[in-house]
Length: 242
Image (cartoon, rainbow, N blue to C red; front, side):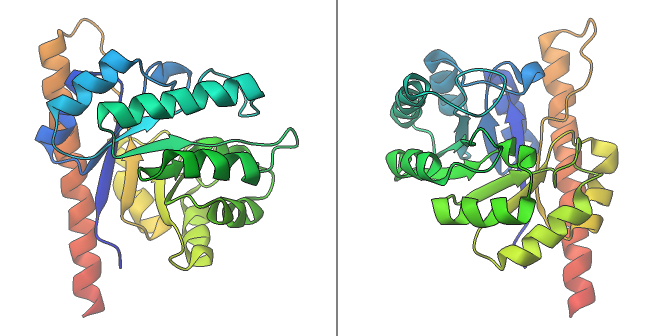
């Protein structure tokens, strides 16, 4: 049974710092989270990585929209990987699809190999594929270390049982994280339905008129609660297995 892991999807230095203070295990850093996330600029990469001691993965996504990329876009992604490496990132999150929606194994593998020795996550482009079981095998063949998925659903609670099936099918060949529309109120149910203890989310609240200081404090509180819930479920599962 894998140990609990909570990865916060952050789009600022302040959010990264709040994640670590709240007990998160890892950060995925991006910009433009409202449109699904894009690669952050080098200044944000450097500032966020220097602000924390936990691992930081950088999202490699040059534009919004689909995940079918031209050669100039793939070259841009390689440059973004170089920037992540230079900034001191532990890993990158990426993914390339074919026009028919299936995983582009060759182009994904080439980016993964280019990113080494950094770790890699195949991101939620996975959830747009027509056959999740086939896509899982393709992502494994491409060499990704991690897979982030909502189980093919619009949000992770609805896809939690599918994530459990994918985890069993993977048989330990890749580390699967459950994420996508995660809410603090549903985290426990996601863990119970999926059977997994690796969770990814932004825990976004509507900011309203809150000051940056208040927003950071609230995020730290939410991360701490997410970690508490995750570890509680893990400990209860371990106790039941004895």
